[in-house]
View 1: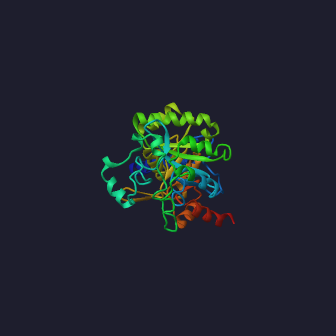
View 2: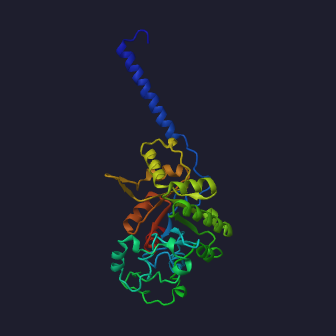
View 3: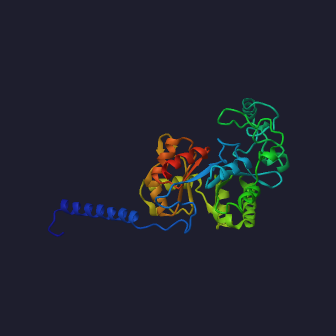
Length: 340
């Protein structure tokens, strides 16, 4: 460079820096990243149709989170995955429910209409929280009371024996016992909703329950929104598959948007995301590039909660691993179009 002018030398230096940056970005995108998990039963494999996950057991088809819903989801709609949230009762049982209270899913308030119950629940002190109720109390109520069928009927409103119809709130133990022998390949997505000490206890009970159903221990993925519960799962139960908490999922998506895949140090097994995030501007997540980059790490991509056929088809075409839906009957009919 002795005979070059200062301007030419500057251009050479800039070109060298740009070339180094280009090589760097090519390297971090071409070098295969380490897999988050070695074996992942939630990844369907290239060219296969996505799994069907019954969100809350398929709440559009049957009363959500009841044994009736779970039985119908597995037996009638042939779902691959049962998805729901877990709460700890006053006396230490893990039950499935979407909210921390039960007023809007059962007749705990007598014969009030759902509109009256929703008004009542605006005052949080009047709600019936799972943490304050025993399992026996919870199972005395009809959890199909407010269910409305696709024909617009409240077909379980007057049911006097909820146990006989499977309309009680369901426990983790009941669900595992129900399908362990007949459906050993069934998969589960659960979220620990309690925080703090109750959340730690929920993790312990779930793990001890899985010890009695060992084949399911490798067929369940556990998620949480609480940082301390995430750390509890990572430190005390590292052999369980974990879903990405919101912050971790966001970090993963950002690293993929910037194409710096190697800078992501996450160790979750399943990326459970909506088709878009609204953070002042809309970030679309239904993109093949996110799925492809997750698959490079052996991460399963699972979209929630999809209840229309058009979006289902779009996600099927993208090659996602799972679609969570309240309407497994609809999703199976859409998948039938592809199977044919």
